[in-house]
Image 1 (cartoon, rainbow, N blue to C red):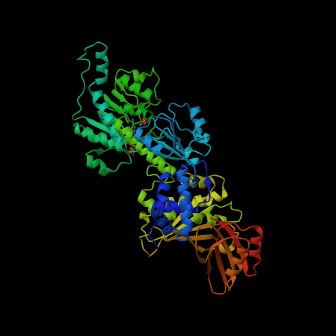
Image 2: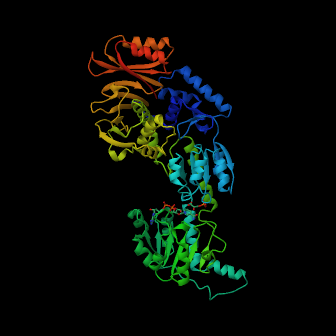
Image 3: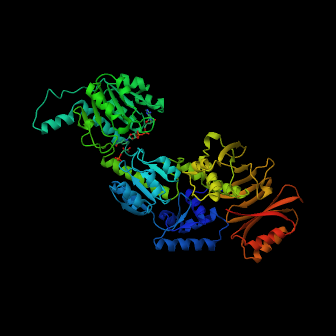
Length: 627
Ligand SMILES: NC(=O)C1=CN([C@@H]2O[C@H](COP(=O)(O)OP(=O)(O)OC[C@H]3O[C@@H](n4cnc5c(N)ncnc54)[C@H](O)[C@@H]3O)[C@@H](O)[C@H]2O)C=CC1
Ligand SMILES: O=C(O)C(=O)COP(=O)(O)O
């Protein structure tokens, strides 16, 4: 087997084999730059040896013309080839470096402070939307997008302002920028902790009001005090490190945090009850989810030490704000320092904001120059990557696949989709499929092969021909469930080279009738198997018959009595109808008995031609399949 192609060559390959063109979909300039030079021509040959040099030159000339006309081609997340620049709506302020990157790729519309109605009105003209915490991306927005919106980029961490379920149902990828503002948020947490302990905000305000109140603003010391970090993730860990430097005793509660990370920082992981009942200071760093919504409420405040101090740079919604006002009034909570609120901005007369023991900032955790530049670049790269059809390492509602794994799996991803697409076309009527099994043969240890991506692509291949929705990695599982389709997986460990992730992918569809009976294996399931050879997906088995044809163009499968001259007979009929044959392969179980002939054709033969093939005396059945 030849070496596995790079993501560029794989994309090129899939672009060349794609037949769909959409004029309103995103572009891929970098792809064009990579593909219209001599080394790419070589690359093209190495991936698709069947492409002649003249075709390659033509392709590259077309690409150059397209490039000079500032039109571009790409295959997006939906697998659609595009010819125009994508439109990216940026609905909140984003760092310049990120905007520059976006502008070099697409048309960027910076429209800040849109009302929900205006956002819905604009969104159907946009391929991507970039938001911060101030834009609510609701189901209405996805509905209004009418299928055009492919990616929502959250320029920050928290994605509680995006309706993820709706995004998934509409096949829209959501990506975030999870790392660039970690330090900023942690530093803001520490700023709130220290300024609260020393009444910095209150005493500043009183001095500006002409007062000099030294005894009123006596603070509390931090050294030796216990700080409970609730949510020991990226921000929580950085707050812990800094608090250790201030001489605090740090404990943390996080049901999912690894103990070794805590140990390395010198932090004790404890239960929720233990954390809140022993801490002098409690700092919140968990995401807002249904499980954390109002987790700090009357009951939990009652369990805290009298005079506890609370810091929140996570999300306002994790606190029941009315209960916090009560806890502040009763003295259970001595002070609170809050950067985030259930409703932002909070009402002007909010009792919480106005409380004299509360210090507030207007959601400034991520607002440093450094963090905003970092976040902007992080999200711009993720959105551009997604519009280019790449899988994102920061996907929130799709499998996250590290780039090196993706590059290795690229040709198998194409294979998975094609095998699924072929198998479903063999089902009589197409619908009514309930149970599909995907069998991977691999020499790899099961733990070192992540098949989520392959399963999603098989699902895409199966569902798309029998549905009117575009299926992608985001909505594949959801759409399968909606159609009552159960997709199971089986791994067979084979004794071959573990250098390649997968030896073969087989799709079995059970309890259905086939319009090509020869595709049924002994157990009565439709069974189609493929392999990657020289970087190109090949069909290698149909039911019990071995074949060997590359999965490009369209395919005719013929079952015939194994006898000489069959290739010539069928080939002649196709030739007379001007149907170009790209390859042929015959597979049989026993010599002289039935055989299967697989014929690759560029065009779909018309009805008359198909009838003539059916009338060849030795042909028992045949089927035309679109790849
Ligand atoms: N104020 C601001 O401007 C900023 C706010 N944030 C907020 O901070 C949160 C944390 O950010 P990161 O640390 O980057 O995220 P992260 O994902 O690295 O950490 C979150 C941690 O919370 C833990 N967690 C989940 N459920 C929990 C529960 N019920 N109890 C305790 N822990 C739980 C998770 O296991 C994870 O370790 C974000 O979700 C976001 O809402 C983040 C950045 C800036
Ligand atoms: O990253 C986060 O979760 C934040 O809360 C930062 O929000 P922002 O982007 O500043 O609106």
